Length: 114
Image (tube, rainbow, N blue to C red):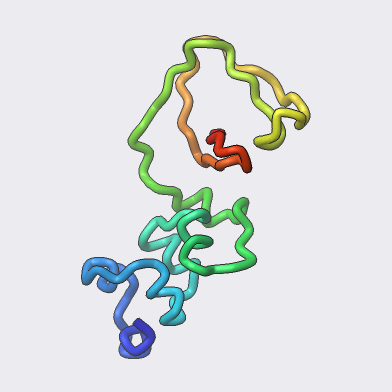
């Protein structure tokens, strides 16, 4: 992938040719390029080997993947400052609120939080 980057091939062409994010990382592609043109997420880039990325960087918010799932709350939804159940309560969403999940994380015990 590095030789293709030097030759001027954009990340979209590499993706179409079957190259993965790890190969692009090893080839020296800048993470911002992958976020903008491939809508790569923080989680995907971290798994591909990129380090020291800020998950709250503006680009991750501007170029997030297209939302395909919308959830409707069936119960009051408690919002917390972080994924920890011990974190500060930031408020609640009423029943029937439409929710787009922007980020999910997996806790040490295997529980997935949105």
